[in-house]
Each structure stands twice: as structure tokens, then as C-alpha cells.
Length: 212
Image 1 (spheres, rainbow, N blue to C red):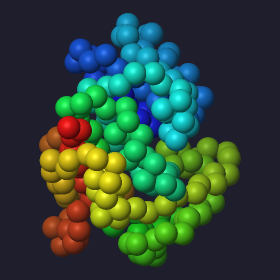
Image 2 (cartoon, rainbow, N blue to C red):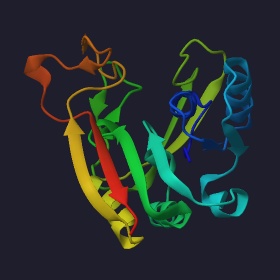
Image 3 (tube, helix red, strand yellow):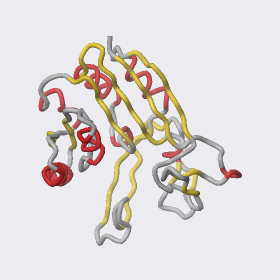
């Protein structure tokens, strides 16, 4: 099960590798496009429109793997319930895997050029931003209004362990899947790193957790 799958590209990558996949997202447009991609590629993934906090009600069964990636926990005000849902939907012996932007990255205000360090690491209040365009298309003729929450590594890990999951590892990396800061350098594997003089903090992290 792929939580917050957007329009399903990662879900379909799992499907291509032979997994029986279910992608979940709150966006009806995202799910509609995921289904179109699934049909076009001749794959057999299932896509369900659902608020994450209603997954236990809207998605039947349990899964060997629950996966979520890049720009996901920042949309969630309540990580305790998030952890409980993951544990509930995993089979015994199942694996949860998260790859996500590091909370330090979310401390920056990206509406300023260059991005400015603005928000506290331990920020319990909602972060509200309003800007023209979208985060994927700055030229779009709309006004975007975003509400987000910055969750530190301790809060993420505690949400999973409190739900009964066992943390196998927590890794931090200096690479990003796209150039989130000005002047980043693209690597041979298609990722991006900061210049040597600017490598002061990790950009992404990953967590693997298991259910007994």
C-alpha cells in the first residue's frame, strides 16, 4: 500500500516490479490520473481516493509493505494517528518504509529567493503559505494556499514506535531528488547535492520499520 501516492508514479514502479499495489491519495484528480496511467501502461494497480486518516475505513485488508515518499508527513497535523494506521494496515512481519525530505529542509521559506531559514525545527503551529502558481508549476494562473506542519525526526520515530512498530534503521542523506536550493549540482544518478561549501545538513532521510 502506497500512502499519499499523488498520481501514482511510485506505485506503478512497484507494480512493474511485480508487486500487487494499492495507491491511496486524497486528491480526486491525482487518483483519476493514476488510474489513466495504470491503464495506459497495462498494469494492475488499484487506486483509491481517501483522506489518509480514513484509510482504515476505506481500504480493506492488510499489506506486506506500506510505503510513502517525498513531501508526505508535512501535510499531516497528527502523526500519532498516522503511525497507528500504518501499524493497523501491516500484516505481522510486514515492513513500513518512508523516504522523506529532512525536517531541516522544511525550516526554510521558499517564497523568498534564495530560500531563507525562517521556521523552527520543533514547530507545533501550522505553517501557512499563499503564492501564485503551484509547487510544480510556478506559472500556473491560480493562487495556491498551503497548510503544513514540520515534524522533527523524534516525532516521526515516536509515532511509529508508539504504534508498536520496531525501527530497523534511520538513515540521512545529502542528496535530494530535485534542486530544492539554488546552485545545486546534479549527480550521475539524477539526484542533486549542494556545493561542497554549503553541505551543512542532510536533505532527505529514510526509515524502515517492521511489525512483529
